[in-house]
Amino acid sequence: MRGLLLLLIIGTRMNAMAQTISGIVTDRHTGQRISGAWITSAKAATISGLQGEFTIKANATTDTIRVKMQGYQSYMLPVDASVNKNLIVTLQQAVIELNEVHVTGRRDRVKDSINNRKMFSREFNSSAPKFKDIVVVASNPGPIPVAGVTIVPSQLLRAITYKHSREYKFKKVLIRDEQNRYIDSRFGDDLVTGITGLKDDSLLNFMDKYRPGIDRLKKMTDYDIRVYIKASGQKFRNDTAVKTK
Image (cartoon, rainbow, N blue to C red; front, side):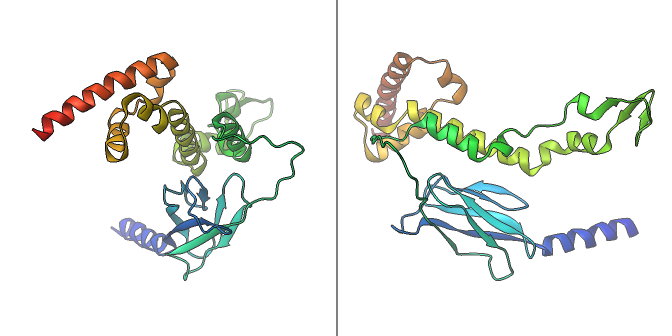
């Protein structure tokens, strides 16, 4: 009973030391909201939504909110008890000197992906320790000597807890965002509208219902995607016509 009471007290103190921060990310010059910005704290990581909105957990007094976005200067804000909601993060565009400028109508998904992997290389390259990192052959006994080898406790603990770590969770978020960008590049609004003629709410409903998964899309050629969209568009119209009768 005493042990349970102690755990409850510790849990209460930890909750009291944590807070949820919400806000939006905007462009300082234009005031427009920015989606896809990376927001991190010591406790969590997230990405700003379509309207620039985000919610993230942070330590109440010893944390820092960090925001990164390609093409903008990094943003940092120390957390205090008064910073807990309606936070407006204004990002300043980075000044980039270029010897040659190429103007295109669309963002280059591959370049974006490469830049993101450079910017967040530590998170992308994080992984659980391998067996050779945990068990080391050694002539002298180490912290945990077992039959001529040394088990490294810190590496063993990291291997056990890695999937609960901030690095692993943030890496999953980064990879999921990269996969969504890949899907958008091959299953985009313009392509669907050009093949099906769908617009506005009908287009949004179709995109949501028939959006292919990453594994399926990687197996499809551009021709396969066009055939899939055409066939799905006809099925979508037939289903819509039945519902309106």
